[in-house]
Image (cartoon, rainbow, N blue to C red; front, side, top):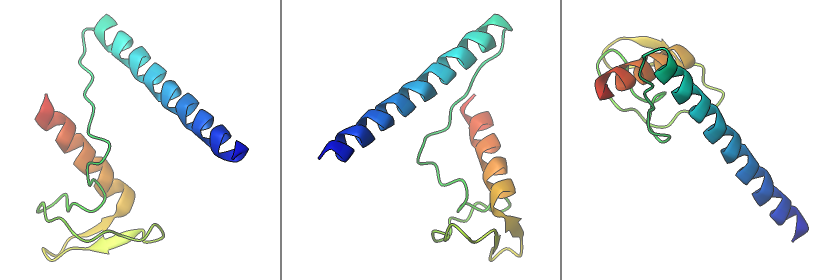
Length: 92
């Protein structure tokens, strides 16, 4: 029971750390006249094809590359970064 309480406490402190980072980024963005965009936590960035927009099945964590029906072959991290950038630009 004690380990469960500690885990909950760590999760809360981790969430507080992310909130603090976000508030610092928002402050700096406002200071320099910029806008800060945030993408939904559950956005399917690594399973969405950045070339054609097809949503594929979930990938195992050890799969680094993925092919799409449109013929594109994506590195998981590069594909996710491109999708997050596109989603952030679409919101602003």
